[in-house]
Image (cartoon, rainbow, N blue to C red; front, side, top):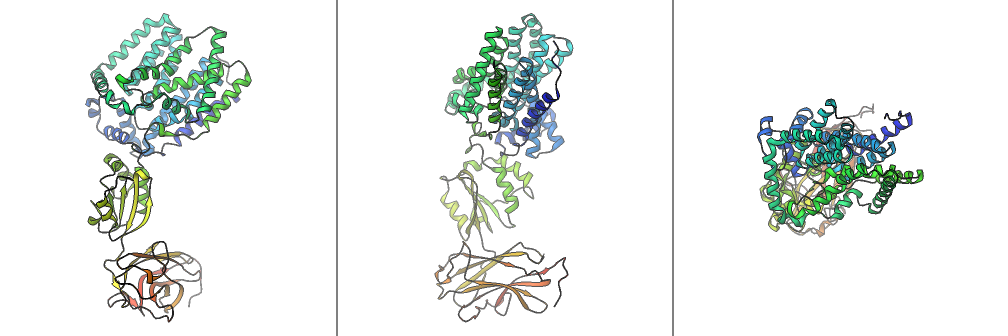
Length: 606
């Protein structure tokens, strides 16, 4: 029977639903750092085709690796670009879910199922992770659509894509066999007259799978042997429910209740259960079977059950479409839309502490903040810092030069260091060496991947200022350029220490001098300022480091060659403390930097 023609309104809603799913999937591709397993997929797939075919990864068939190899040769190795492959598969899955639900119920069922599926945090996570689970989902949904067409009329034209998708599914991941078995269940329940033909299809798929069957059997054996050891890390039924609900448990419970009511009314009115039993086997039977056999196979984890999620969302969408009253259907659709607007939460599928250290964000931050001479020091007790594949991947993509300079400890680092540790697991000696001769000036990251910037003075040992023990240890200027514009702000960080208690409080002056006439054009005078110093020099402790931070603004009318100078003086008399002989100085002021001030404006010249 031909379906009714699609109206412009229906086409608009269908397009909007699929665009919403595409936006939800694509917008989160760059949110998470790669897991170590994801980088392993990238490294494995970067090998040549012969290696991918011959290698026997007992956990994964070669199908996803071959796809990823081809994709990376086209788009490169950027993490978002790589994840786009899975996103495209996810958009195919969302469209397939819509078609399946619409065929089994109505367009409303298709809209509700596709929207719930495409915006689910559970779906989005596995459609972005660089593992084969995404295409278990995608090819599983496509197989369901082809199954509905094939059982109506199993012609050769329909059989060929039907067979190829099943072969692709089992070559993506071994859980793809669930999809093949589900196709047989659907045939048995809804078109038993075609069961012999389906057995022929199954035989072709089994023969195609034969080359990797030993790999599959070896993996099952090893998983069964390790199951008892890993039980402590298995998920619970509540974990699985919250993966679907995104922790909006009551809202999701209301959606499920409406779907159950819709299916109940449909079965009562139509007396047909074939589609319901098929979807129940898919969405409920697979997780329940994994739960029962978990002590043997250790398969009850959200990532291994990703293939079941399509069945769950089809049950929801079709159930809502089968509700007897328009108001009830509108309520169900409204709740699905409300759930779709909730932010995703991927923490159900990776431990945020031990499996999601923020390598990507850290390396991106270092690309912007790392200075020449800096080094990275990793505390030996930082377990979350030990994923060398993640360091390699993100450094080669985001860091200039390919790798971040490293030092074994602070003593081996000539300059400032970024010291990474995990709270509660610090090595006291490593921390002490990172802090020696430096000031903690910046912090970054969560407690389980925490970076502290121990900044070293620019000059070592610097030179004396006056005869009281005061020592100037250099200055840093931000931004450090050869020319500036009128109105620019220049930040100067000057470093100090003292070998003995200072007898009084001194003032620090920062001066901008016009070189052609020696005229003072801008200045700032005050006691030591900033969060890394005490404001009274008489309180400074011998051997401690202090950093004075101050900002000077270039006058708007200024243009030409200028110089920054720094002086320390007694505020009562204005007498400057002269720098030691050999220091760059003029009239008792330290010469910091010469530069030009250039303007597009036509300022009058002196």
